[in-house]
Image (cartoon, rainbow, N blue to C red; front, side):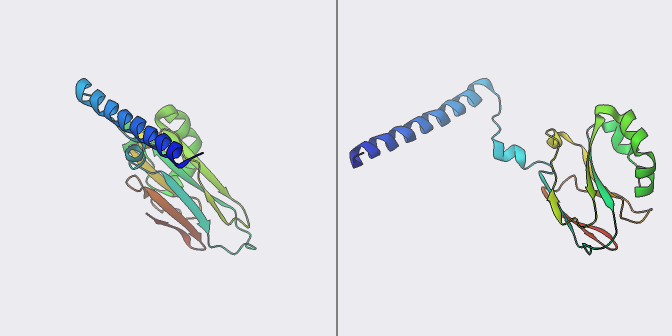
Length: 164
């Protein structure tokens, strides 16, 4: 392909992209609707959770964490205040809550190193996002990560550490 042909092809691509942007701008002005680009919608709420273990891989310790996405305003106030309350009534609570919440569970067997969680598709709609850790003390409160974008959870011999 010659240099002139490449230049014509590139100019045509820029012209089409420019026309597409003008079309979107015209639609948003004429219809009074707002246009939300993908980058903006990904910035609201939790969009990434990575979990890493600092435990000895040979230690005989099996644990789990639950990341709970709460969508129903009535459930926000009813969420268990401690790890003990959550895990002792988890099955019944999730059954009664139905579509009002999503639970992402990560089972952490002996020798676990790290993982990135698969999050629910409606995660940006969550009113509250809480982390409960089975490995924490019985009276440990859940960690609220509702306002975090990227979350890093470390599991060590004493419990969990959450950084945002």
